[in-house]
Length: 243
Length: 338
Ligand SMILES: Nc1ncnc2c1ncn2[C@@H]1O[C@H](COP(=O)(O)OP(=O)(O)O)[C@@H](O)[C@H]1O
Ligand SMILES: [Mg+2]
Image 1: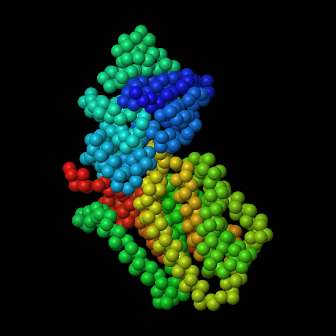
Image 2: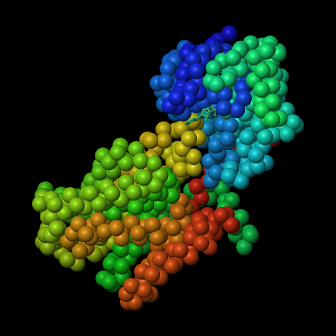
């Protein structure tokens, strides 16, 4: 198995708040690493550090054997990191086609017809063909999430970062997305954050549970979901909510 | 109406590829002939209209397409004009030729200040541009080399045939106006144009998708400044005299802003409409003193209230009309055998 991503001792704090705390892990091609953890555990912050949105205070990010720790975000994108944001980030005044074309042209480094047909294919793959000429700013939630995934795919990544792409969707809609991600798995390494662990159990090869920025436990989905640590934090939340 | 709308908006690119050069050729021929047909007064007014239009289009490029709102663009008008004057006076370059160097002066100024101004975000950039413009105005006013508060006079022009000043100004102005259209249409259909649109809409997503946000903005900024400087130089050829207060007059940017806001920021057609409205109002009410300014302000406010995307922008959004389409059309399903 080829290792796509190696994260070594990543750390990030905002003032005295530690949001990513000494995290090390690996992702191989064809593998999906699920990341779970309560709200505020630092999952999104981990993606910010990985994709270059913020600089890590410490640690190393190795992509395909190359150290990308000090590259700015757009260069990491060229190296093959693509991300679907938790809060979709469309280009509202561009059409769906143009949105995906941006991804294919710049992150995917395609030109002319190659870029256009790549965008076209990805849009069909995620089921957005009916909206292809619509402005992205007017899409409903599911379509905005699909567009977010479409852009990440059109980027032709080595490493795909999915941040709660199933959040806010119905059961049926989640299944569509899960199938989509499963069909993509062979092509690249995936890190998939989902607040709700069940959506991940079916897709992820391994799970990593975060709490206060730190790795609680990592292993097979069954082992992680069944572990005392994970049950404690999730039960803890249930208790809080009930109180 | 619906049929026309569909035809205008959905016509394939190939159709326009032939139409655009044809229209441009006709415009260029009209421009060449105009000085021989039109009287002196009208020719001067036409030059002014064309220059203001081109400046508005340059402001549109930066603010409407690159998303950088500048209220200091007068600095580039003055820089281009002063650059041309200085080249002619201090280096003896023919003024008509010196105009061609003006864009390099204003463009260079933009390139030099960009690393500082680009550290400022959004409203801070806007204010930063204004402060920068004020600083340059003061420095120019203190520079003996640039004539200080007395300004500079283009004395070389005195030795030239006066009959040719207006026609040559006009040809330069027509070149700037047509050039601004071609530049914007070409740019927006290019890869860089797509990058700019993406950056304008969402800079986080743009950089996530491999776009060098800083570089895209930088290029737009420098092109916009260069074009504005060219127009400034052409404009001051006629008066043959420039003062800091005239070259760096904040009114320049107010006019550019008015035209783009009224016509439609971020559309290529908008500034055409805005320029017509601006000069229409000015010609109709110029004699009524301050009332004309109040009227301008009111028009801008009313347009912003009832048609937030400007006159053309609103038409475009509602009916999909587009004279110079820059939307990228998806390949047809047939191409892929579906
Ligand atoms: N830019 C920031 N400045 C300060 N604190 C931040 C910033 N971004 C995130 N945080 C904090 O980091 C913690 C982790 O947030 P986040 O990574 O979004 O969690 P998750 O995605 O797991 O819900 C939260 O406490 C959040 O308030
Ligand atoms: Mg999050």
